[in-house]
Image 1 (cartoon, helix red, strand yellow):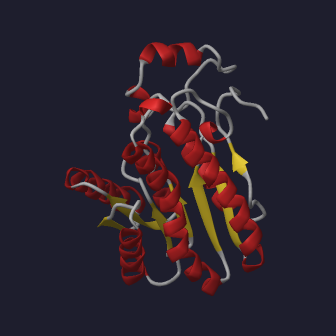
Image 2: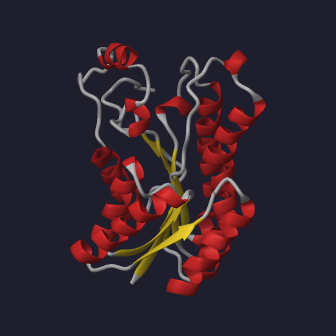
Length: 246
């Protein structure tokens, strides 16, 4: 049985990705940060078992912290063995605030959760992939990592950083058959999007050539593609309805 670790995998895009991993036959290790998220994560694991016949493991870990990432990976290895087939770095938060009004602790939280957590997780997972001489790492970036977004300086910086990290690691570990790719979602219906000014959302929607906001399953399908395509590395795919065309 194959094993995948996903951060931020209990809700929104992460939940859709977790279910897709289960559908693909992976045992899935998921982190949760707060006690209030424990029941949600355990319910998701039960769904994986009932619907797809795979096992899951919920680990309380704040992936912005190095020691918690170590704890998460150790728990995965103890439960499912040293062969980690897929790592999905999906944990992410946003402030959506004017730059000059952002206190240091707020923008540092975004950078540490969105970007530094991926460094931490790769630092612990990639050695196992090197040992196996294969592996797949997918980082959830954003269209904000490709273009500027007002009131999102910290978020855009973190997501652009993920793309740079992905390309560098793809170059470094290509000969070990470890693939690194990014998904850069456009506007997707999640709690994060529902939590911002809906008049702004409606205005942005008008600028999408397809005229629709995407859903979380669109991103899960992109993840499946990146896992299955064995010749794809150092790239990003951006399901965005055409709002950004490089």
